[in-house]
Length: 259
Image 1 (cartoon, rainbow, N blue to C red):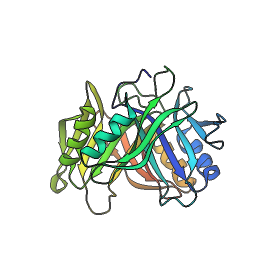
Image 2: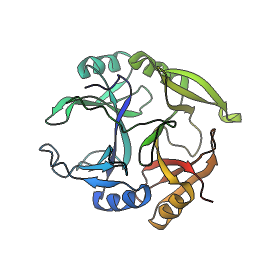
Image 3: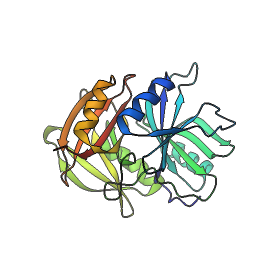
Image 4: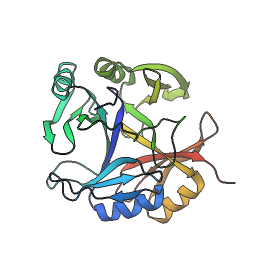
């Protein structure tokens, strides 16, 4: 594994109807879908950006699992077992113990002390992930922003700082909602944290790049999705949209507005 510890390396959608989710996201975000024929997950689908980079996966919500359709992400770690121990030592919980997946790597599903779930993973092989590119280097289909809504954003960040060395650096005031605080890992801006407020579910939300925000909104609503907020102008001149898919999974997208 060549990915730097604490960086997002994979995004994954759990859906009740993977076939319908595949049709929705390929239409709205322009992804194509590959089927890697993994022994451990024969129906797993890989989401591929227009430039050919794999950015995430799609799978069915496991039967009987107490989970709603949602997006999750995987964070790179050098040692999954040691990271899981640090998670529990700093107030987090383990949802799925560390396990090896042939052809994939070693991973565990954990949650921070305020309940936001995420995976930690040491991937097999030496390929560098290009799933998350950041706002300055992203192309359509790639993740560009990771946003954590938490009951206490500073306490949440303290947890991730202990695990990965993340830090708050810079902020955007949001009036009575407090500050929208930017999160950095080294020189990389990963996204931001914000405090919970009415109408906004706590947890991680991910934004993907699109060529044209207005065209993506039209595709979204035509395919049964819904705009929750936006398009809103963001620093740099792009626009962001918060949305939900037909099964209620929250996600977002970012891009320029059409002429």
